[in-house]
Amino acid sequence: MNRSSEGPTPPRLRAILVDDEPLARIHLASRLKEHPEIEIVGEAEDVSSAVSLISSEKPDVIFLDIQMPKKNGFALLPKLEAIDPQPAVIFVTAFDEYAIKAFEANALDYLTKPVSAGRLAKTMLRLNKQLVSQTGISPPTIETGKRLKTEDLVLLREKSLTMMVKTREIAAIDSQGDYTRIHLCEGKILMMKQTLAIWESQLPADLFAKVSRSLLVNRKSVARMERKNLLSWDLYLAGAKESITLSNLESKRLREML
Image (cartoon, rainbow, N blue to C red; front, side, top):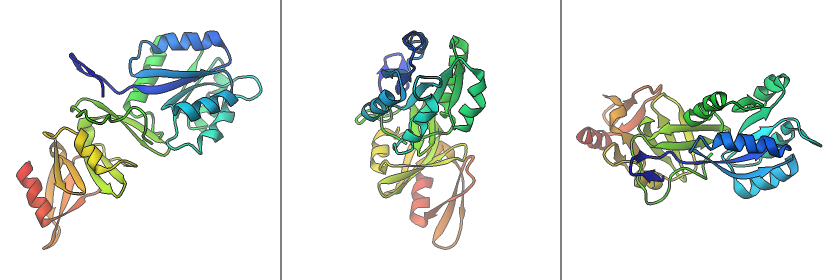
């Protein structure tokens, strides 16, 4: 992740604007300039051009107008189902009557035109916090060769769920082949197509302990360990609903690193 000398900088989310009104796109783009976590990578004036743009740019989030010529914004949603990872969708429209339908369509949020700075800030807060539970990984996540800091934001995605969390909010990561299972401090678990080796090279070594070849644990997230039987232990993480089974050797190694 890019960082200035003043501190960690959040990863930039790739966004596209889809609206048939050029002035509306200009207005929204000007509002988004106030949010450095967003990078506008393209604009489209209808659903057809949006499909092509999404295919080439692979955005993290789409600001989508509802009322457009030929096809309305809802017509784009089925096209997104075949995309992995799916981008989050924020509807932008002048008509409140579409609000219920927008949320039924599993949109991240709904903005009315003209978009106010205050309302957009709330949307961005939601996006930066969890992207309301929508989505997969690819663009602005971890950059090779740069180690994360505890307050850096990481973009996590699993199918239709997307979240942005601080590094310290990751409680543990265990390997599942080419995938990894991300245990968050709040108890949520995500499955991502990313190897444990990549995570290990990026997470802060002073915070995460490598318990085994398949498990990284946030030292500060360890609540307790209890013996399960003669061969294994249960590791309980703060806020987690389920325990993680450790071997005797793994439990000993973790205790020594706490």
